[in-house]
Length: 488
Image (cartoon, rainbow, N blue to C red):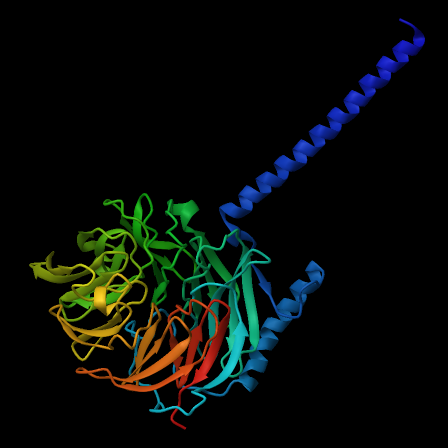
């Protein structure tokens, strides 16, 4: 081999070595990036960071200092902005978990041609999450598609000014919207559940991060169809959750520390539904009642045996969104859509042992069923909206007796889709699929319409309502609005 040939071979070897080293470096970089991606997505709450509108794009150190200073400043300036408005809506279904406001101010019994006044309107991410309201602040669990973040946003009740937000990275693809849950708020704690079952606890006064859980990673929770819709429940200083994982059906977590205080075994292997845990007192005993995918369970809420299963009953339902509704000291109604119907339960107790009788079970079209919203029980009647598979009553607002018989309906000319409804000042408020708000006189005998107005223009306005004082909060896929309903 000539010298020139040897030089050419040497050059080829060098080039091969060079490109091999480049390939190895690129592969290492890709693997490192993948490892970081897996680590972040295994628990994105690790990097939960504060964000204040107006401070995007600052260097990390400057942003950190600005956020810290302005979190304190926001709460100071908020005291000067927000008037004292009576009323709280601290969690799913309100202060008493029944979607009934018992101490609201007098609300208007009629509206002018323009309808009730819309005080403010803000743009939000797509979904059905509804706000909670506490101490003149409106809290909303949201999702930012551009930045791929779950976001807890805080707005001033007075004018909708965004006060602060906290977020963490999580990848979510639009699936009939994103966020579906309502924060639980007390004077000390805010607890949220994200679409991918991430639980976060913050300090209410400062917005500081306290702790987080990834229910899918930590408890093998199966993410529900269309993402998580279970709303957290805070009792005293304990948040009650239903992971429905491999081992844990329900559990209590200390809000201060994140310590798991008690767990309930998931021996029936039920899965998480879109329903939420309801606190009830049944036959004199405090219980947490939950409708999982597979059945309905009651867990003791008493200190001496907290977390113990008191009773359970199987229930086959494809999708369960409405929560359990108590109608007496010992009776609970369950409803669901998608061809399920309802089930009325009678709880019995003998020397500390509980049993359950199914009083009746009705298919869609035979009795009350609700697809998304939870029925309201008032005046010894169940009120709700019949789903599309409910026969001639489909999408009508109805009132049913506790024995499962129809008392009255809104009629074929008054259909409301899947929208939310609420009872306040002896008036029902119903939002239909087209953003029309209807006001009814509360009645145990007939449908009495008092007013109707177009308040939203977007699609799928299915998020539950909230009411603080005389201010109602409604949403569609794109906007959250604050509506004044006061008599003055």
